[in-house]
Length: 288
Image (tube, rainbow, N blue to C red):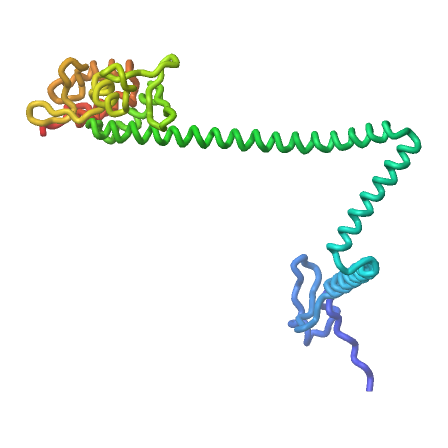
């Protein structure tokens, strides 16, 4: 009985395979080549790649085993081997020193060893100094941020207690920062101007955030506060203070524009909010 021709696994033309098995061939992704659909069979190139990788892996394993054999011959204890290695380095340095003494004299040997030790120590000192300076800078930044949090909290609490509207607190904090609040040795907020402490009304005690908010801030920026006038509308004027052009009784678009140009939009918005209005409003606020 004659042996049938083998069916190729890969072919460049379906005409080269029997018609009955052609449905079992599929075209590869790169096109022009057809591969037989068979379970459990890997392409030749994949098989060769696997064989090559396996050969390379066996070579690496053999080399690792060779190195381990040498290592075990020295000492199986890695810590003990490291100690022996360090002792050998020290012994080598002693021999070098001895040769230097015999060749150049004791003073030359001492000078060279001192120079080497100095160079090594200077490098360590430099690295430690840089690390210390970095930590010091980080510490000072953290201290300043913590102090600012304490000051901001004190000003906020004092301002709200004095009647400042909550929406004006950001502007109040900005004004407080410009006025020069710092912490004293007791971590209490005090105001400094030109290097000197600003005292309160009694002339003895330093100005406190509460006194600053209830007197200085109210006199200079009354629009930050809840005000009542006549029927109880908020944001009306304080006797002796600037007129709020956003209140119903003093509504004046020209004055509003002048104030925005002179004091800035943030302050203008705070004054408008205190009057129950807005800088974008075109009509006076409604009566309460």
